[in-house]
Length: 375
Image (cartoon, rainbow, N blue to C red; front, side, top):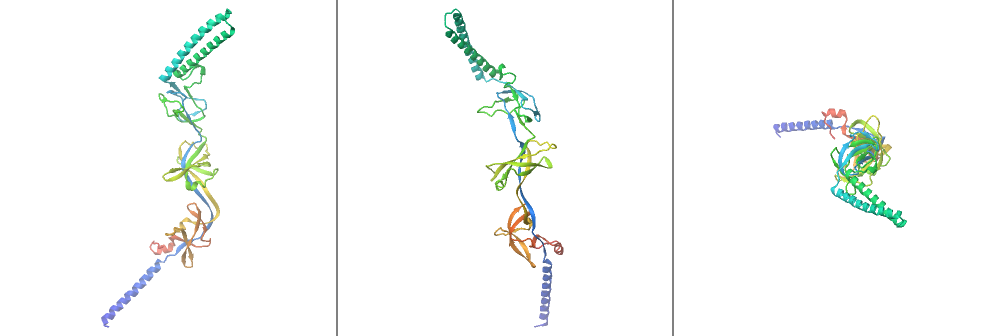
């Protein structure tokens, strides 16, 4: 081998050794020691949040007993009324067909009355002279009384069609719209001059006002089918309102719907809860609200931080990495309830196991690598 070839080989050998040393040092600096945590005993409360609104326990709609036009409205929205207070008055607009029919009945009843009166007067004179028997006179008298009653009824019907009431009804008439419950006026959807219709078998009628007791409010919301089986009537919950920040109102669950409704591909179940109010906050009907509901509560359970979990890419089973000597080994774990931060561990680890914090290396090792973390 020539001298030049020896020199070249020597240079290559030195370069190879230098490269091995450099890679060895680099790999040594990349070895990171991960921090660990242990499992702990705690209380875990699994909750769900139901979205909905706060509404009065009972809301009464006031509807007219006749069809007509609003003549006057005597209250405003937000006013407090008592049962029997006057809300509005309605001016009757007679139906032409009904008016014509009632007028015809009055005329017919008048003819019958006149004929019965003539017969009565004639038979009375004959009875006074002893020409006819008492039985014949009593028959004529009965016919006269019936004709008089039929005429009075026909005239009353005509007056009701024209005015919406008759003088025989006294002060309370169909044209007066009266509050049928005590509470606050929530809404008056009509104004003076609006046409309204009465409630009947074919028509729900026009709502003139709605009244509710604002001291008795409930929460109405919905929960998903995956959580409804965990709800128990009587459970204490907390209701927070979007309009009142930083305040939670205690409530008690009193209703869970036996039937769900499909919304956006998921089945939702309606729930209701009695809300306890305070005197410092006026709660308006329809406020949007959220209810925090405790589904499950377990005390003294073995738990870990949920951030320590990893999931197998193939089986999707949860696992953690437990320190054994200088290395970490994979441990599949069986999980229980979670509150979003801590999660119950049913099996797979013990309280003494050192669990790898896989997304957080020791600070010293991170600093050595210029802020880089190697998993």
